[in-house]
Image (tube, rainbow, N blue to C red; front, side):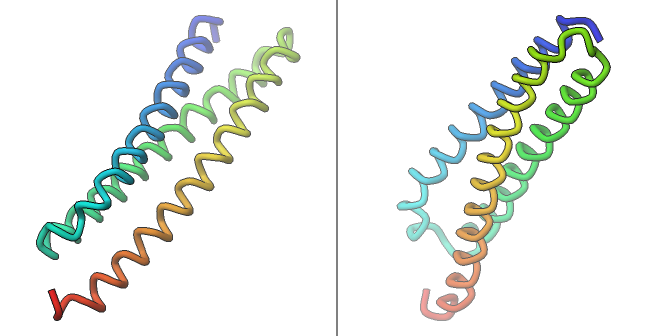
Length: 120
């Protein structure tokens, strides 16, 4: 693969990571307003948010794997590509931790939603 493709993938991974983090921050901000919406809307938005976050994660993973494949194909730039792959692995590991935490929060919210559905 040409170096421009690798640079484009790195740029795409950066923007996807920034988008993921900013979306997560917006969701944390909107969480305090979640109690004012009807239960049905809350459940629908929860499912929609989980779908959006999973789309972010799987797209980031796909770009990361493509970059890994390019790193293996070009053995001449091993040190530079290895450093970027290690950096991307650390970033991806942090994203997976974030997705795991968000999933736990989402499941806990669903549990509480079903538990208090009658009282709302």
